[in-house]
Image (tube, rainbow, N blue to C red; front, top):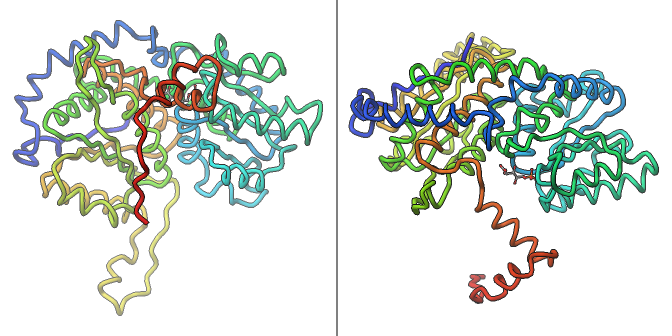
Length: 461
Ligand code: PA5
């Protein structure tokens, strides 16, 4: 079963003048058809290699499964070293599909602990070293460019540690996921004989979860990666035409919403397992659409600020703002019809009618009822909202969800006439870091930084 997308509450029929009129939606037909035509013409090429990942990875998947099966017998810790698109997907899929407290389970219930290091906070690195045993750990260094300072510094720390602790066979504790053609990691991999998986050149970081970037960590954790790819394929096939294309519809609605000043996109899953899907979405949506110029060089400063939120937790933190604050947001709720386990709230509060009404219901019923109640409150207060509904969280539906958001993002890029696949703003920050650390080749950037207007610190004590 494919996930369902309900957009009633985006429309003026349900939220009055804050909503989208049917005529406005109809007027987008030409533009939407154009976006579909451009998308289909570019599939599999340029930066759209991710569209083919459900179809062209049989050999890669076989290699991943063989390697994962072999390594699963040897290791007790799997650590991802990476950042951005090289870390958010693996973390999101692990959280969605493994036991919610996987790393805390006793050893007879979990064989491999899973950790993602996506920062360069020294305390975090020290904490990692406190909880792992390097001789029982496989480190997956993931960086397409092979140049990212955060990932390469983590690699240098870990490889130094492994050499000291393990000696000659230290290289068997590192698996590299990187470009086959460029960057430092591929050179290091060849020099040190690391097992290596490749990120296709036509797949950008934030669109890479369904290639070895995400598939290897998932396979190590026993996740059915073929089912994930099948889900992605099903969603792709359902979202290629102009009609009945929910990813396109979602992109069109967001496009109209942006034109109406809804510059914030809140992603609010009602399932803890999907919490980090919201993080992954935030990078995908923010980095892809936040662009200064369009494809014709016109300055447009496009984008919609993505915000992650968790139902029901953030009902007690953010929903007051979402229902009574400015009309500057679209709130997307993600619901799960059937949880993989449920807990009944027991009887025993007969003397307290204000609590007793809960008794006999399940927590699954409660969380879903609260989602419906929030949807009602948002709609009643005339704030744009829509709902994505999954039957259940499993490898297939997760593959569908990932592909749905990737397709929506690509369509949105075409509607906005921007390059959704570059990230010049991120590169600027990366280059400034290289210059400040005196990296060779960045002398001009260093000079630019040194000549930037000096500021006096404005601190209030
Ligand atoms: O989407 C992107 O391309 C970026 O966010 C990258 O994923 C991120 O900067 C990490 O890059 P790399 O994989 O080259 O280390």
